[in-house]
Length: 184
Image 1 (cartoon, rainbow, N blue to C red):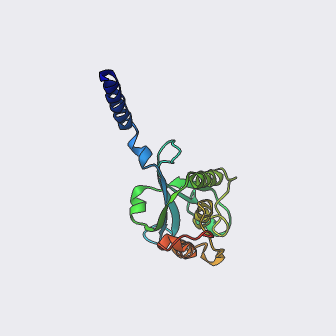
Image 2 (image 1 turned 180 degrees about the vertical axis):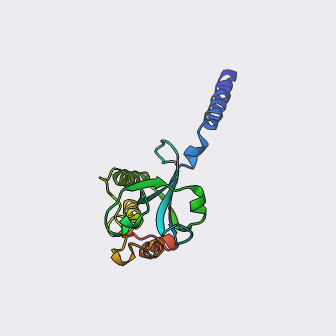
Image 3 (image 1 turned 90 degrees about the vertical axis):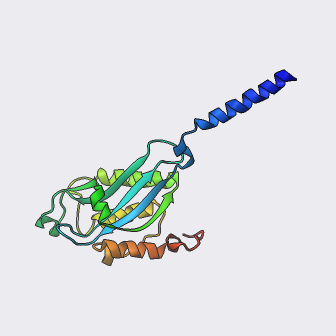
């Protein structure tokens, strides 16, 4: 009987010790996507971008990056046609001066879809930036669709980051705390 008692104590201690070695991040694993805009100010033009922060539930590296799409060089040429474009990691001071419109947690499938969309924009044939057809708002709209959001077809807002993101939020009422329905 004493042997069985010690076996049970041993297994109990082993189970407790094993649970201590589970990474803390595994319990809190999830990637949050946040949508931002920046209005005119200083030498900046209106801009939209996203922030991805967290770790996928399925594991893999953690992420803490801000993705925006912009012209490689700001010049009058952006007003007349396509110019070189780039997906960039927005600097933290820029984020601090921007407006966060909404955030939510991505499923692993949504996260992969968002990352695939970012990679597709990074791989675009140059010149890839076009103020009327492929700007930061178009980029963020593609990311919103990849994340499963309803994105209203609003050509009139494709040069208005703040207004565009407000329209996306309105088209997805659950982002404002309303219950999420099967169609949203």
